[in-house]
Length: 187
Image (cartoon, rainbow, N blue to C red; front, side):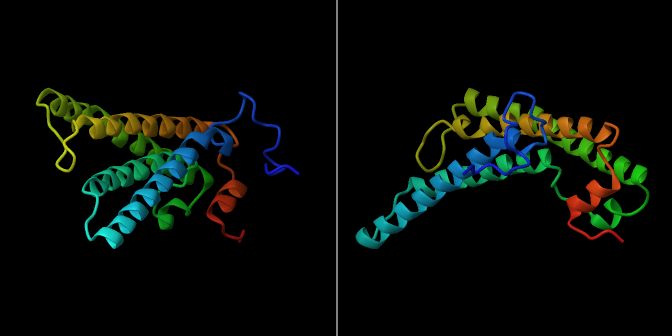
């Protein structure tokens, strides 16, 4: 018995669409790995604190970094799946052309925002590296943490641009697809 849903079985080839869940495996696996690391670090700290009345000093610093990375990685998956936040009062009203235009505008703004974040955060990483900043908890170079912001922001930008292209294709924004995506019944 296969664990792959019937509608996605056999499509693990290189032709998988970017909005296909198989193409988002990297985000999904990174999310699982980060959550597991967070759980293990927190559990280890609780055990040490319970048995020794002291704690690992580094756990808070690593946990904060992992939570930020988790938000960025999960955000990338949400953008690629077109599940990012929107105001449904505006997004689900009007003609299909209006909804498509609003969806594409929103996706373009997401791409622009994360492109700006990626570009500006490169300066932060460079400053951390150049001034030899160290982290407050364990004293490792700060750029080890800050390097991930421009990298994942660039990934989110690429995912948003891919969604923008898919939203512009004919038939990519039909009435049925809008209803299925929102989970609402047809009127």
